[in-house]
Length: 338
Ligand code: CUA
Image (cartoon, rainbow, N blue to C red; front, side, top):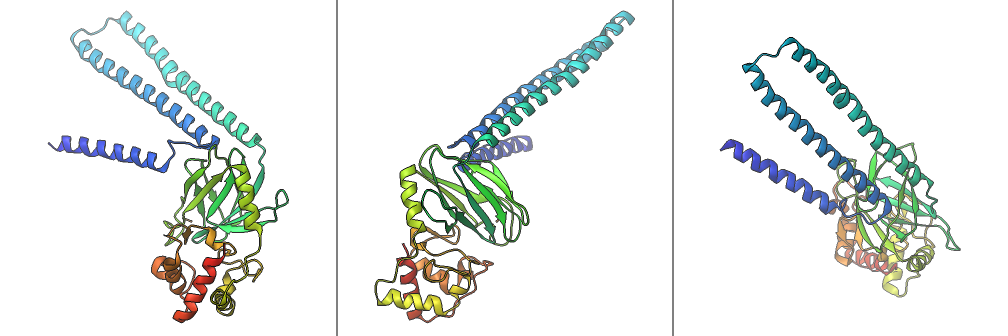
C-alpha cells in the first residue's frame, strides 16, 4: 500500500518537474544558445540512462551468478580465470569507459564554448540588476543615440547581441530559458551573456538568484523583432520625451518635477540627472509595471505611484503623498509618454 503511494508520488513529482521544465521553455529553444544547451542536455540524459541500464544489468547478472556459485564452489583454475576477468572488467568499466565518456562530453562542451565566444556581436547592451528591476542601457548604433529602458530587452532577430551584466546591490541572476543559459550579476564584477533569437516573439526571463523580498517580481522579457522593426523601435526610444499636449498632462509634468518623483527617476528632455530608479522617457510603450508585477494601465499606475508597497512590498519606491487631482494629472502625464 505504502509502496504504491510512494511510487505514485514519485511518478507525479517527476511528471510535474518535467512539465515545469517545458513551461519554462528550456525544451523549446528559440535561439542558438538554448539549442546548444538542449543538445548537450539530451546527450547527457541518453548516455547517462544507457550507463545506468548497463550497471543495473550487470548487477542483476552478478546477483544471479552469486546464487549459482553457492551450489558449486569454483576450482582454483576457475578462480584464477575469474580474478583476471574481474581485473579486466574493473579497468574497462571503471576506468576506461568513464574516462572516455567524460572526455568526450568535456571536449564537446569546450568546443561549443569556443564556438560561442567566437561569435561577433552586433552590439552590446549593458544590463544592470537592481533590487528589483533591470536597467537596460543601449549603445549608440547606426545613427541612433544611446538610450535607457527597463525590464524589457528588445533585440533584432538573427543577430547576436552581447549583454554586459552588472549588479548595483546584491547578486542577481539572469535567465531567459528559451534563448540562453543563466549568468550571475555580481556586485563589483562584470560578466557577459550572448543572446540571439531566431524568430520574432516575446520570451520570458527571470531573476534566478534569491535577491530579497521581491525576487519573484524581478521578471525580465526579451522581445525579438525583425531587424527593420527593431531599428524603428530603437530610433523612437532614443528620442527625448514628448511635450505635454494639454493642461492635464502639463500639470502632471509639474507634479513630476515638483515632488520627489524626479529625485529618483529620469525623463529625457525633462530631467536627465538622477538615474536611481527606472527611466520613464517612454514609459507608455512598456506593457508591464514593476518588472512584470502588473499590466501597465491607468488603474495600476495610480495604485503604484500612490503606494508601491501595496503591490510590491519591499520595493525601494516610497509611498507618495499626493492629492487625488495631483495623482490624476501625474498618471495622465506618465501614460502620455509614448
Ligand atoms: Cu534579483 Cu532575484
